[in-house]
Amino acid sequence: MVIISCDDDDFKPFDYAGQAVIDDTALIEYMQTHYYDEALDSIKEITNGQASFYSQVETDVITENDIDYNLYYIVSKEGVGSQPSTVDKVLPLYRGELMSGSVFDSRTSIAVGNPWFSLQSVVKGWTYGFTHFKGGTNISQPNAPLEFTDFGEGFLFIPSGLGYGNGGSGIIPPSSPLIFTIELQYVSVEDHDNDNVPSYLEDLNSDRDFLNDDTDGDGIPDYLDGDDDGDGTITLEEDTNGDGDPTNDDDDGDGIPNYLDSDS
Image 1 (cartoon, rainbow, N blue to C red):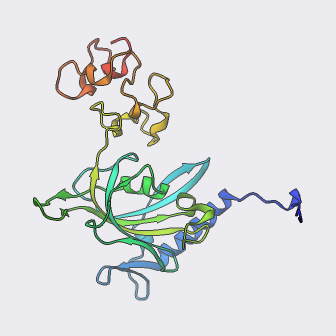
Image 2 (image 1 turned 30 degrees about the vertical axis):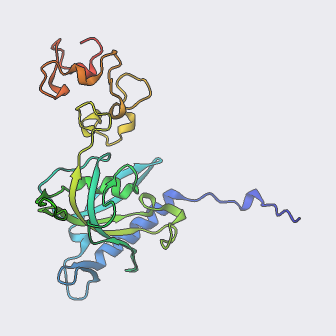
Image 3 (image 1 turned 120 degrees about the vertical axis):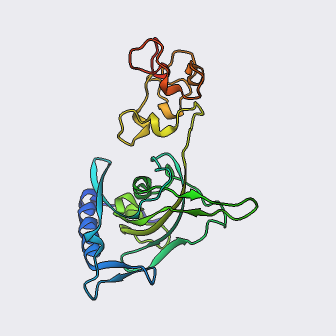
């Protein structure tokens, strides 16, 4: 048996912050030199003064592991339905490609398989990116395929740190920024703990991180906790006016709804 030792001096940890800068530079150059050809439903290089992606893009700064990443997005059509939070489910059509133009994944129909995605179980670029769009209107007919109209459409430009990172995935090489063309057909607004308070309302500090909202400090975040204030009365039973909405009941008038007020 041969044992190969590795000199610790040769080991270099991956430079995540440095890669974020590299990705951002590459994405900006890509957006400055590419546009969407609607007639061909395809991303093309600018050849004749077409409006670049960069002239339309907006930025969402996402902090992961103490590194700030620029997530770029373009809302071509906003949509008229619900706007998802980072813990909701979405029903999208999409095409994912690398900056080389190579398509690594796509979904062109919602009629095949399970078309729903939980934004808790996808790459962070999707988790946060889809929150800038709205779903459409359900016009499906009985015993017919699902059909939606007036849905959100646009693009996501995702650095590798919010994608598959330095490990890559399948045909996606390590440290690859990702480009997505998306249609957000519909949104399922979730109530994870079934307490009649939609999960998006349980992000009390509005930082889009649902894991750090824990009113009673029991280690269970509010969106998963059926008794948010830990007073022994479940949230469902703190709806004292019986209108099905626990958020508008404040029996002691202190400005804190009963379900978050342990001494209400």
